[in-house]
Amino acid sequence: MKAPRVLFVCHNHPAFHPGGTEIFAHDLFRTLRDEFGVETMFLGCADRLHRDRRPGTLFQTVDRSADEMVMWAGHFDRFNLSQVDLHAVVPEFTDFLRVYKPDIVHFHHILMVGAEALFLVRRTLPRARIVMTLHDYFPICAHEGQMVTTKGMALCERATPDSCHRCFPDIDADKFVLRRGQIQSMFSLVDQFLAPSEFLRRRYIEWGLPADKITVMRNARPDAEPAPLRPVSGGGRRDAFGFFGNLNPFKGVPVLLDAAQRLVRQGDTRFTLGLHGGMPFQTKEFQEKVEGAVRKSAGTVVLRGAYKAHELRALIATVDWVVVPSIWWENAPLVIQEAFQHRRPVICSDIGGMAEAVRPDVDGLHFRAGDAVDLARVMRRAMDEAGLWQRLSDGIAPVPTIESCAEDHLDLYQSMLATQRRLSA
Image (cartoon, rainbow, N blue to C red; front, top):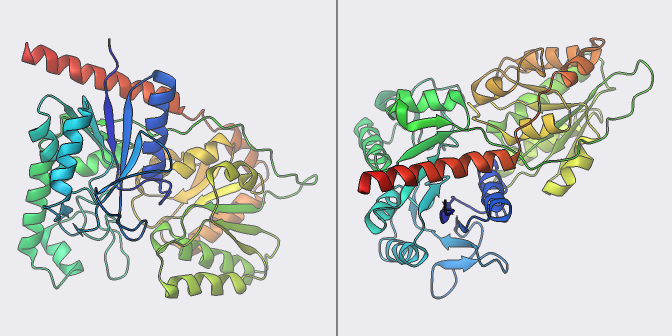
């Protein structure tokens, strides 16, 4: 069967914003292209935070790649996830679809491009199939898709007009009803949804998407040679912890720093905690809070800064444990799979896709989300319990390869197109 022509649409490009969604979507795009010979195009979005608008077309190349582009989408309604630049984005995106003529349009986000892009695909290419991977909760939650309250950062179990109005008292409850209806109307045009975790799948079913249109398909990482273990002397503790990823409040960085300070106050200054990642787009107040906590850590906490993908192996070789302390319902953090590739047990919050990915006392440890006291307790157990690190490291199962993940996607695309051809015959 002839391989389909596939267009990937994402809210950004990893060259500008190396978030988990962008990285996974780009890895999948490259693997389908390079390993399976699929004709693919990666279309990210950009605004003034990432790149200035340039004269002429909204479409810009990424370096010298002929099959990687960004579309400038600086006029965007984040509340309604709606593209408001009707005079530029709509006609140019439509022309792009007519020229490229993909068989499959795979959306990895509607942020920046807008929910209306689904309608434009359906109107312009009625025979094309639309796939959407639900990487987070932006369509459900107007609080940056985090599903935590704006006051107190408490976990939100379910988005309702009244609960959303409490988070945003300046926005009437009926506008949340309209927001949900508008987004779900556009989502009705999607042929197949994918969810990287069962937890996220259930959340979207509760929100109103048909259960039979959402399939769990796990994310994956490119193969990596496991990093060497950190040398410890006979009987030495496995007491080097590492955080990897962008530093922000939702990732639980303040909780982790609080836990480290508690260990120091209890008299333990032998452990280390490396914070690997930058603080892009964070407030000055947050940056100062992190830097202040590091200064008070008695040398146990070190800010290592942003890193490139190829540097991860060397960095993770310096740690024994990877900590994922997010305070929101993380869906499928890539850092967990990366830690497992390098045989590092994971300490994570006991919620969402994190708890689904890390099996307590099998390949990692859980702590109560947002609870620095409990995290400090678990970190102490990780350091002090004899044989625990080795047992958890031995319990880590093989991580799915990006090649097997790409093959699963290709099988899905071809099955959808075959079904479409039968129905059209």
